[in-house]
Amino acid sequence: MVSQPYSLTIQLPRPSDEVRGWLRAGLLIAPAIAAIVHPGLNQRADDVLAKGELHVALPAVRLFGKQVIPSKTLFYQASPLVGSSIPTGVSTGLSDEPVKVGMTVAGYPVTSNFGPRTAPCAGCSSDHKGVDLGTPTGTPLKAFVAGTKVSCWWDGGGGGQVASIWIGPEFYQALHLSSCRNGTYGPGEVYARTGNTGRGNGAHLHWEQKIGGSKVQPKKGVLEATLTGAPPAGFDPSPYLGNAGGKDLAQFVANFEGFRECPYLDPVGVATIGYGTTRYPDGRAVKMGDPCITEAQAAEYKQGDLAKFNAIAKGAIARPMTPSQETAWTSFLYNVGPAGAQSTAVQRFNAGDIEGAAEALKQWDKGKVNGQMKTLPGLVNRRAEEAELLKQ
Ligand SMILES: [Zn+2]
Image 1 (cartoon, rainbow, N blue to C red):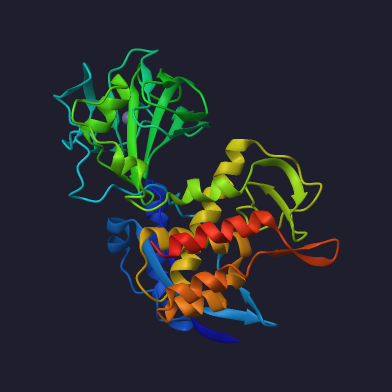
Image 2 (cartoon, protein in one colour):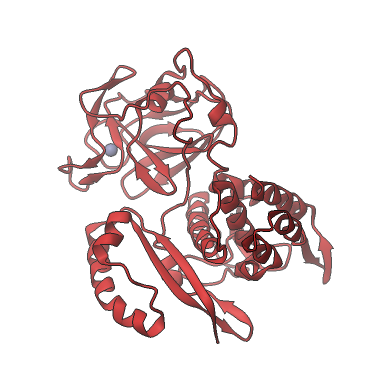
């Protein structure tokens, strides 16, 4: 029943005190469970908290020839795996200076640092995963690179109106906005305005950056260019326009998975909702006739699914991956399901045969239409793009 080890990487969100307590308790009893299940759980609670990651190697359990995915609950502790960075040493001409109190950015004072702080309001965070800027309501946020993508959503957890912003391979979020418009923007175009929505004490901009799902100390240059819409002379946008940091996973998958608010049958007859979600975060399969969902809910499900399939990809691939290769495998598994982890494509890749893997990947382009297996153009395109990423 048990085949080769199944490696699972869980990227934990910024743990709240409650989650920290839960983790400590869980990791005290975990070694006992791990000794029974698998000796893979071997990290101390403090290591896990320091790194924000929990690596668990579980055996792959197969029932009647089908791989059963372990612990859905654990997967959904994962934070969105979005954002990569422009490689160090590649200069865009923007300031790399960390944003700190005492500094002004585009004329606005920095009012709160990144990192631990005394919570400035009831319910405000004491571990500040972004920086605050004293911007009056209505201050415009602007694109400064062609192809800047903006996705607006409401954060009931205190962020108010939020803009998720992809600038090339980099991912940023602006919180507490007064307005936000979804879309793709070019230099100088306004996509949002700062405000005072959600939790806080007064109008300000909370600005944060994520790399690989973790929030990092934001740098001055990008924030300044976002507020002015006009980067300084000598700015080189090419690292943002190329594939310098690998394709952004969420963006890549979103290009292929259109949003549908009500359940529908996918090309192979599986009930699907949102952005290609087939199971809700609690593990229940989507059924035709389930209630429709909002785009924000769908985006949340998608991030959970991405984290889940990213973990499966990392478990299936037994050699170092470039960011592009990681995106390709995650997109592939997101689309075909965990069975893809056993595919010839994965086996060839693990054996070092990248060309052969790309060819084998392209075979997964068929779906059942009226009971007949047919080549589907959408899948042909997706496989071609994934195969291309395997070579980057
Ligand atoms: Zn803040």
